[in-house]
Length: 289
Image (cartoon, rainbow, N blue to C red; front, side, top):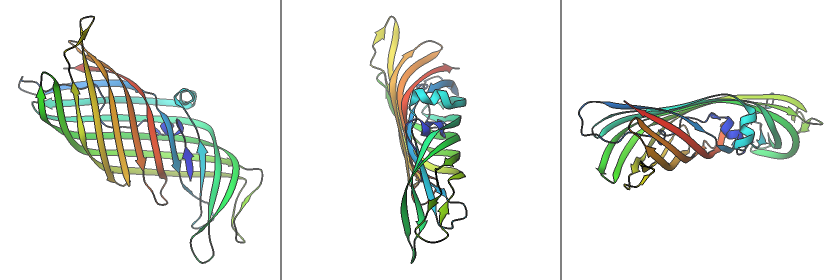
């Protein structure tokens, strides 16, 4: 299994940064009739940690993994392309929000730490390995959720939301070992130089809460607000959840928010995505119309 630590996973964003739940900047319920909408470009710089599992070429039932580490700073060095944007439509208590992230990361250093070969009589036999590798990632994360405002007032609002999150990832690891990695049985081996490719599309249903707290505090004449978002889901994944919170400054044209966001994925079994977490700061600007 391939493990991508802080940053590498981000690279996946699917590494991509992904489309996690709608971005922190958001509109508030309005007494004015009709639809109101907001567009929110933003930047998210997460560290990533996780595990990818590849099937071994020419070894039925075999799998291997590579560990890689990327923090937010190193992520920028490997980043080839990034696009992040959110949006929201709202009519009274009803809303529809979407968030989209697409990221592409070039080769970054990683390491193979273990290889699982089929064992005689069933099961697997694990062979320790130490091999350098480079992993490239490209991914898209898209979340869409409908919401209903359960409570609102001068203090802010709380919305219940339900929808789906799609996570698409393409991963490639180039293995460079000093010698072939041999399994416990004859004919089982992983070449000292091998290219491992895998892709996956995960679609999960999610439910959660989102909203903001407006304490009526102003700094230099600008009102402060504290947006938040929390969701949990399952489907193609065994578990996925996301949480975000921050502080925003509301202007007549919209708002600016500085926050922190965490996204977790676990697919389990022998699937590509074993577990991934993306955690890091975000900065967004929301324009209301």
